[in-house]
Each structure stands twice: as C-alpha cells, then as structure tokens.
Image (cartoon, rainbow, N blue to C red; front, top):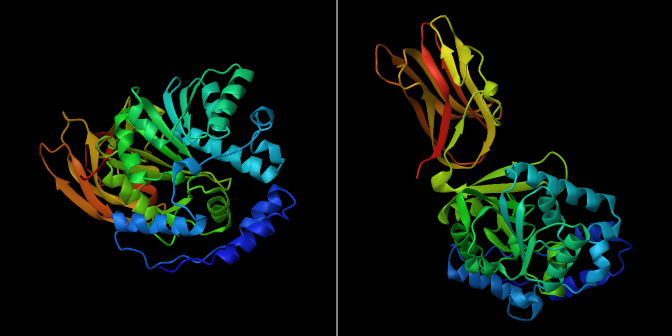
Amino acid sequence: MNLPHLQAIDDFLKGLEQARDDDHLRQMFSQFSACYDLNVPQDPFSQDYRDYQFKLYEHLTGRAYSNTHEKSDFDVAYHAVNPFPFCHGSAATVGNQLLAIGFIIKVMNLPKGAKILEFGPGWGNTTLILAKMGYQVTAIDIEQNFVELIKTRARMEHITLTCLQGDFAAIRELKETFDAILFFECFHHAQDHLSLLRDCHQVLKEGGLICFGAEPITDDFPLPWGLRMDGEPLWAIRKNGWLELGFNKTYFHEALRQCGFIGVDHHGQDGLWSHAIIAKRASEFSTTYGFIAQGSSPCLNYQIGRLYGDTLIISEQDEGYAIHGPYQPLPAGEWDVEILSDETAPLHGQFTLDCVDDMGAKIVAQETQMIIKHSEKTRLTLSFNSTTAMKSFEVRLKVAPHSQAKLKGLRVTPRM
C-alpha cells in the first residue's frame, strides 16, 4: 500500500490559511493533488477493496472512520440569514450553486405535489426551493446544526417542510414512500454506498426516481471508487475528518445495476456543478416515446406520413424517415427497441431500422432490413449492446416506397 506523504498535505493545508477569500481558496484547492495508489484489490465490490479505502482514511486522519466525524460547527442564527454560498459573496460560487440546483430540478421534472426525500441538505438551499414549488419535502441531515438552520430558514419564509436529524441509515426507519430520492453533493459521504442504494427500494414509490446531483462521478476518476486525492477533498478529510469519495462513472453505473437500478447521465451547458444521474428501477426503466405533435417531451420526429391523433399513417407513396429521435442520453448496456404500431394494421413493405449516436455519426446497431408482404406482423424490433453511454440516442426507421404502416412510436427496454 503506497500511502501519500502527510507532510506535503499538511504544508498544503497550512498554505490555505493565507487565502484572501472564497475564490482564492478554491483556486488554491485546484493547485494541489496527492498521488493515487492504483495497486488496489481487483474487485471493487469486495470487502478487501473496502478495507483498503478505509485504511487509507485512517492514514490520512489518524483514526478509524465514524459518521460522527461528519460534523459542522457554525453559528445557526447568523447563517440562517447568511447561508452558504451567499455568505462568501463570490459570483462564481453562488452562480455555480444556483445553476446546479436549477439543473437538478429541471432533470427530475417531478409533477407538482410530489413527495421528495432529500439526504444531506446542508444549508437547505435546495430544500427550501423545492418546498416553495409545492413539493412535499422530507430532509435528513446528520448535523443537528443544519437541521436547526433549515427549520429556522423555513419559519422565516413561512415554508412547510419536514427536516430530521439522522444519517443515511435513517432510510431503513422511514414508513413513508417517496416519488424521488435526492442526493445533492452528499452521496459521496456514504460509508456503505452499496447498502444505501439497495435500501432505496423500500422507500421509493413505483415509478419513482433517484437523483445524484453534482456528485464526484466522472469518466476520469482513476479508481472504481475511493478517497479523492485532490485539494479540496484532502482538506475536508485531513482537517475535518469527513469521508470524501469519488466514483468512476463505469463503476457507478455497474453498482446501480447490481442494486437493481439503471441510471442516465445528464449534463448542463452552464455551471461547474450542473450534472446529474437520474436512476430508476431496472424493472421500470422501459421508456415509450410518441410523436412530436403529441406535445410530449422528449418525443419523436418524422419526415413522412400524416399524423392523426397519436398515430402516424404511412401510405404507399411515402418514402423516407418515418421516425427519428428521441435524441436522449442512454446508459451503456443491452437494449431492445420496439417500433410500436397499430395492432389491427399489419406492416407491409420494406423498413430499415437502426440505432445511432452523435446525430447519426456513430452507428451503434447494424441496420436491419425487413421485407413483409401480406403478413400479420405488427412489430419491428432491434436489439443491441452499447459498451459506452450514448449522449444522443436516436432510433431511425426508414421506409421504402410501396410500404404501409400505422405507427404509434417506440419503446426502449433494458434486456435483463
């Protein structure tokens, strides 16, 4: 086990005391990183791998990990009116925080009145905004000061919400179920992230989602998961005793799968922290897309045919793309695509079906041509295996002349 040199880390921490303001501090964070030991146990799901990471934590902090270390000491009364990030007056930090909060609200896209379970609400900015929108929010934080802070801020603004003190294990004691579970900048503090993922099933309603917002889940993290060795996490670990984990995206999606979920990556155009993974139960992940005139979002486009209600009518004189879309992210894995058609109207003619990414630049599934004459067949299907996540998943159905069909959309389903 190649352990990082503590003296170099302590020298870095001492230098942070010279930071002029929050912007300068974050700049200094970005200028330091310790080396990762890549000689780790092979299986990231094993107890040996977990023991390795927590031995590293003991080396960095001088003590065994306990979630009682996840504490924050501050003046509740003062910060109730001057919470992070506003207390620092940094345009960059405030802007990035607000963009990140807005982004996760947008990608969760929950109906009004939905019930949300939020872990690690911290300063309560996300909590209060969600409650103002009419959502029924239950927030759980391990730090009693944060619980009191959020309750105080809620009273000041006459906002109704529930805020409880507890750690991640509190999920096992809840009797309610929720439409969404939110981890915003907090999941990386989970002492046993696999158990936490499995525990989500018992409180998540049918059709519900889990949102992992602004978490350190990246393509370039050098290990499957483990303690982060860059400046800010090292400061948090060595000085405060907090657990600061990072995850490689490939590992994280596999962890979701092993725990019964499938996650989709979402990235915003603006803001340092505007990214999220939205996960749903694998058994419920089947997604159906209709046509653009239905007003659904996301939806399919078409270049030929005539739309009547929810059905696209393809006649013998039509030629071209009857379906292209929905231009949505899709995680790596094995998938089945089914073109939905009117079961009372058999397909007739020649159809070419393929799946592509990057606006057609990358063909993920080979083209499938089908010639059907006087058949009772009403289904077109295509199966494929994508080894990497797709940024702009697109299904294209091309119709040759003298073909007939009544199309209703498409369904995408994970192959279990």
